[in-house]
Each structure stands twice: as structure tokens, then as C-alpha cells.
Length: 355
Image 1 (tube, rainbow, N blue to C red):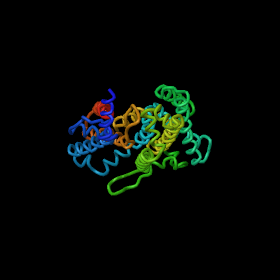
Image 2 (image 1 turned 180 degrees about the vertical axis):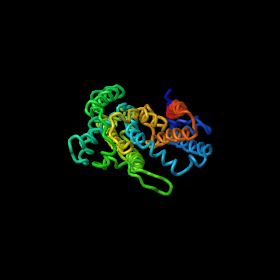
Image 3 (image 1 turned 60 degrees about the vertical axis):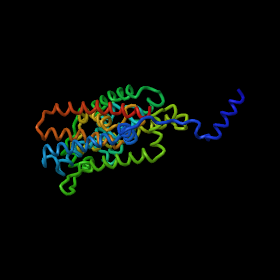
Image 4 (image 1 turned 120 degrees about the horizontal axis):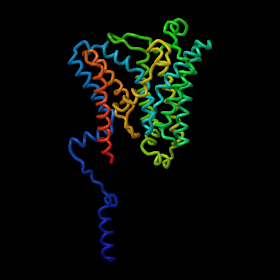
């Protein structure tokens, strides 16, 4: 027996310690390569779908669709959904979900309008208070999820109802008209300011949406806080053991999400021109749609926030393209539903690469 042990030790020393444990990847072929590439860069799928849909509608409709004006019109139409999707993406990356983003957006806009016109507060202060309102709502969500350990779905579902009711009760269902805002507080409509680049017509809201996505992409990829967000979404227990303050990270994510919703409320005023408590009611569903189609995993810890922008643009391309083609509006919902299911199926397939 001792001779066998000596022979084994001699063989190990001769082969090298690094060769004792080897794990060979048996997955080969083009399909496995594609699967790995999509796992590393999850935004590639929605980017491919976006480019393919633009080319498809361009070939079908010609210059009526494939023109600078039409393409920038899509950007204008999805700017609100894109901004809210950025907030939703942060929460979903932590394996949560926020059903209250739309209601927080609308409440922030109502606070900005009511404080300006009901109380006569300078518009700059009113806007600041509206942004703070979004942050406070986000903090409450984050505290309940991180400290009280309540499920994000239940917390934000309840917050959605509370904020929605508060919105109607506080505003008395009163709409502040666009003419009144334009005459007395044009800063509220700042995001609607247009400027032309060639044949394209852009707004400050569109520029803000794109810059916000790029900034968040950089922060999530290049900062310690961003890596903590991914770590918490992937495995909060492992993140805690590795030194990540999970509670503080979760609260900061929800607070930042609320702040972004506040900016979305400001942009909403510019988009529709008025302050209306009944606007943006579907923003929560639309933002989740953009995030899912954009390839961000609902299980958390994986995805690129640029994917949410691509997802919002895909919805905008299909909506405008089918409208220009004269198709029934229900075809848009049908195709978007197919895209949602397909996106989740692709996400499940991609996740197998790490199994």
C-alpha cells in the first residue's frame, strides 16, 4: 500500500501540481460559440433584432420609413419609456422588479406642476422637490426590500397603488394646461425643446435619454458600485460574504431608480405639454417590456443597460412601422408579446452556458 502511495506522489510531482485538477469544456461547435458570445454580451440579441427590424421596415416602406425624420420620430416617441426603462433596469439587475416606476414618474410631475402653480413656488425649486419626491418613494421601496426583507414584487405593487391614489387625491384630478405652463413656467417643458441636425429633429429629452443610458453603462461596468449591483443580483449571499454591503447597495439602487423616475416626470411634462395625473399609466409595463426585450435577465445579475434602450427602440420601430404600413394596432401588441416570450426563452438558453 505504501509503495502505491509513493508511486502516486511521484507521478503527481512529475506531472506538476497545476495538472492535478483539469476541467475540460466539452461544448464545441458554432452554436456553443454563439451561446458564449451572447452570455458575455447580452445586448447583441436586441441590437440584432433592432437592426433587422429597421432594415425590414425600410425595405417594405421605403423612404416613408427609412428617413432621418421617421427614425428620429421613433426616438421622440420612446424617450419616456427609455428613461423609465433605465430605472427599471437597475432594479431588475438586482433580481427585483419595480411596478411603481410609472406612478412615481407621474407623481413627480404633478408635484412639479402643483408646487409651481398652486403655491407659487419658483419653478426651479418645484422641479427639485419633484426629483426629491421620486427619491423618497425609491427610498421607501428600497428600505422595505433591503431592511424588512419583503419581496420586491409585493412592495412595489403596494407602492404603485399608494402613489397612484396619492397622485389623484393631491392633484384633485386637475390638469395644468400646456398654454399656462408655456406662459408662466416654460422650464417645465425644457425636455421638449427641439433642434434640427440635418433632416433629423431631436429633443433635449432624447439627448437626455441617450446620455443617461451611456452614463449608467459606464457606471455599472467601470465602478465598484456597478460591480456590487451585478453581484447582489447574481447571488446576494455570496456578495455579502465577499464584503459587499447588500442592504446599502439595494437601497441606493431604488433611490437612484426613484430619481430617474423624477427626471422622467419632468420629461413627461415636456412630451405631453401639460401636467396630467392620468398620463403615463402604462409606463411600468412598457418599461418591463423594454428591459425584457433588451436582454436583461429577470433573474438578476446579467445584462447590459444599453439593451433596455435597444428594447425600447424595437417597440418604437414596430409601432411606427406597422402604423405606416396601415396595419391594425393589435398586430403591434401581438408581435411585442411574441418578442417578450422569445426574449425570455433566449435568456434561459444563454444562462445554460454558465450552468
